[in-house]
Length: 234
Ligand SMILES: N[C@@H](CCC(=O)N[C@@H](CS)C(=O)NCC(=O)O)C(=O)O
Image (cartoon, rainbow, N blue to C red; front, side):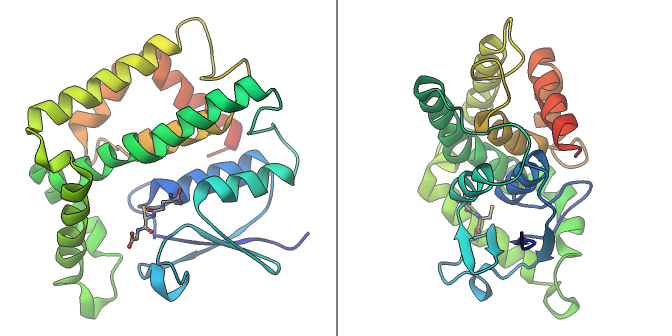
């Protein structure tokens, strides 16, 4: 089997990548025990004509979108099946994964870029990923672009207290769902656990202390993230 090459946003702090979608793909590759190479770039459009990362080059296959990449990974390699074979469980996993990617993800973006105090903690580490020439303005331009996306998505057009309340409520819902079970869907790890872990893992205490404390306060959720990371050796 050819070694896949993952193009991703660079790591920050102890994270695999600044992008939780790229971390999600790394978790998937590790769970399926597929050795891979990583190439870091801040310039997604230089790699993927549609300007998005992660992007996986695997032999003559060029794969984009973390969900499609995980589907391809799931068909190869060993390790647990990430998309359950049972259609009802597969449907549940699909809905939860998509919610993590399309809703929970934005809470993480908000935590990094919209919360002023947290952004200030992230900035030095983020800045260090840029080529020296771009360091003074690069991160600020990236932040401006990201804030425009957050406004279009809607989170920054809500009162900050409401955004935080929604985040806490979602964590409570995950915690309730995990009552009496180890995994979010059925009785085995699935793509839903991988996506939720990738989205929450990025909320490190070093730059998102409020969010990290909210996650840490949920015992079952914390155990889920630890179980996924242990299974992936991450
Ligand atoms: N649905 C995509 C989302 C990927 C995505 O939005 N990646 C971000 C990084 S976290 C990106 O490439 N942003 C660059 C841009 O939108 O210009 C996936 O699951 O891979």
